[in-house]
Amino acid sequence: MPFIILTVGIVFLLLLIVKFKLNTFVSLIITATLVALGLGMNPADIAHSIETGIGGTLGELAIVFGMGAMLGRLVADAGGAFRIAETLIQKFGRKRLQLAVMVASFIIGIALFFEVGMVLLIPIVFAIAMEASVPLLYLGIPMATALSVTHGFLPPHPAPTAIAVALGANPGKVLIFGLITAVVAAIIAGPLFTKVIMKVIPDAFTIKKELTAFGEQKTFKLEDTPSFGIATLTSLFPVILMAITTGWQIFRFDGRVPKSPQGIDAVIEMIGNPVMAILISLVVALFTMGYLRKRSFKEIANSIDTSTRSIAGLLLVIGGGAAFKQVLIDGGVGKAVAEVFQGVDVSPIILAWVITVILRIALGSATVAALTAAGLVMPLMQGAGIDPTFMVLSIGAGSLAFSHVNDAGFWMFKEYFDLNIKQTFQTWTLLETIIAVVGLGMSLFLNMLFG
View 1 (spheres, rainbow, N blue to C red):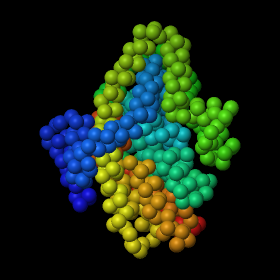
View 2 (cartoon, helix red, strand yellow):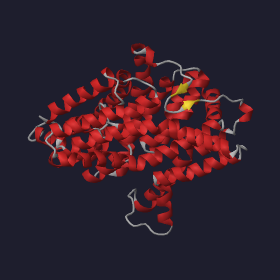
View 3 (cartoon, rainbow, N blue to C red):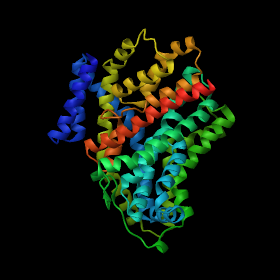
View 4 (spheres, rainbow, N blue to C red):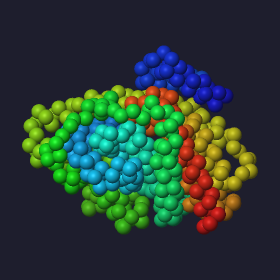
């Protein structure tokens, strides 16, 4: 029954958005409320569940998104994004731009959460696409793929780190084999998938001069822009701060997060927190992209105001998706999945992937799906003598599969790339599923060689 209610809820949501053109946020909240009632939740608890979902997701994201958008806009309006775009085009050439964007996104994705990386990279990738006269989605798919694989397979991201701890896997092995898996998945779901999907939905691959979620891109003369070094340093400052903290944790605490850091440990822990990293980087951008560029206080304020207006709707949509996810969790969909797989006799690696995929489809959150699946398959892994490293990769792969309307990433991709619902399913949902399938295949293959 929970699966039937979930399916009906998703169909109803799509009808509201696609057929009746109702505001996406309103549609998500209405659907979340009706699905909660259908799952048998106490009507008195539904509002609290919706509030918890929105607050839990937007509590940190609103700050990171808001200041991240300001940082990106400051870099763009000062000509920094144009300078980075022009330099990359000259160095790599138009034929290798996809590779350049994917490699840069992969490196950034190792240090940053998916959402943060997306916010920071969008203005730069948009500038590259405009300058090279290529569709934004042509570069956007490799970018999103690179960010996604690091989120699913590589510590110190929350899901792979938490699963490795839960299953007792060696973090170093997870990182090494995760890198191999992530690179293969990124190539297949990035540049190769782009070549195919461009022929299937050419309408989505149009050259755009303006993005709803970012605004109009200014044009510059190269001599009026900041240097490549300053522009790159400003854009990557959050990455540098988080990388310092990650490296310090590996050096001092074997990759673990200290519970009660003191002194220099506390300071380094602070600067690596996404909120503080973005705040510090924004202050740096105000100096390098504002003061040093001799921009007036009014011009700087206009850049900041424009950035906040452009992401207001996006934040509401992400919050609505989080509310939908929360009622599914509170309504017991996760427990229903666990009951279905009791007593199933399949390879633990495959079973872990299947359970995680179903949880991902049902609940939306990759991290929640991964952690729930880890608890369900732990007894099977211990009995079969499987190396937990490959269980971590299998669960990480499954946690990325079939992202749809109850996942914040789905709405981010849709809004940032100005796609409709159908196009988002055809691009984002499909590329996430490709990553999941490739990840499972790599988990089985690596386990066969090294398990």
